[in-house]
Length: 121
Image (cartoon, rainbow, N blue to C red; front, top):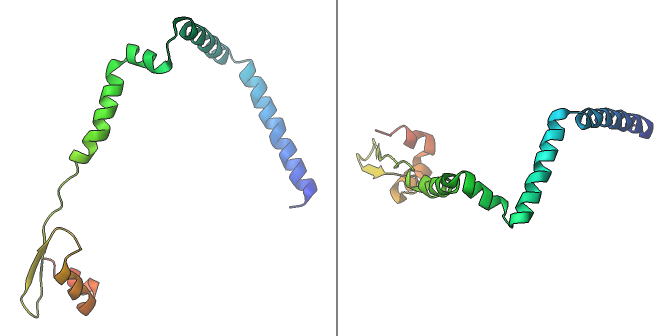
């Protein structure tokens, strides 16, 4: 892209963003939100209260449930299922919950992973 084309594209983007900014400046909803935030910050400064304290006041269970949900996620992980593989040549049976089994790895090296997965009972 030439410098002139790039300049014109950026200029058009800037004009569109300036138009959008003007529309937001005249939006009554935005004005109300700004006014509310200013009043809230003045009250917080007046009483020496932070945002976390306000959240705790308004919804005391929000932080408690957030900390429980984070720590509770680990305990709710489902158990791995036992997989049983039977070697059709030797008749040997391997039971495992994961793929890190010594005999299973040896079989996969010797016979190939696709064929060993076919031995799943």
